Length: 312
Ligand code: PMV
Image (cartoon, rainbow, N blue to C red; front, side, top):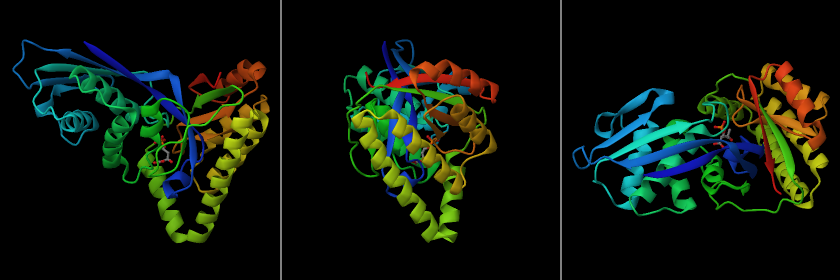
């Protein structure tokens, strides 16, 4: 039996602008994860792969499942990539504690966990960049123009400074960052949010390019703050990033309420994280304010919160 897990993710700075070539910073969120388990199935005919994902009510033989669905798709992509198209019979079970469609990278994490478990089980383990490329191929089917940040941070499992088309750049974390995620409970479609931005940018290219530039500058200043251990300044940059995300039309009243609640309860900064229009809010908090901010988020309507940390 082979087990592999992949974390959720949050975008600290730079979503949406990253689709248009600006940098972004993302972190893995290990408090939630997708897990894939692969078992030999000696009773089944050779080549049969039984796939089950109870959370999305998917189960069946690979040959009978919709080939365009992300789960069968990542299985096929992985087998092709490792050059094992007809393995001995297998059973593959996927579970996840990452809320779906909430900006936490659930789709990428499921793909990464499957690619990793399957390739390891079949004796051809893939490295993070190979796993990331496979997960990206699947993301493209459903999101059209993904930047690649989700599959990258989830596959590498460490904070990344990311520019589209480039390998992820690691960076130092000068002082631990204490973060809180608040889920609005509103499911979002990344392709709808990204498509909306694309359309508004088409109508108003100059304004949107200027906003993306401003976000890119914030990301680079943010990286300096992270490396130098200046969390309060980083928080201010996160809030400025949120204001720009509001301007490009991807916030929502529920997200704005969580941002406001976090700031009033003492967060250094807060913003939406991911595609927006719902999904998740991310706050950077002084450690001694963590409990107060958490309670404030729940009072302001968060359906649940996740506390996570970056750095020592
Ligand atoms: O799918 P989400 O919610 O994790 O958003 C991904 C981040 C975007 O910048 C909005 C899209 C992308 O492909 O980078």
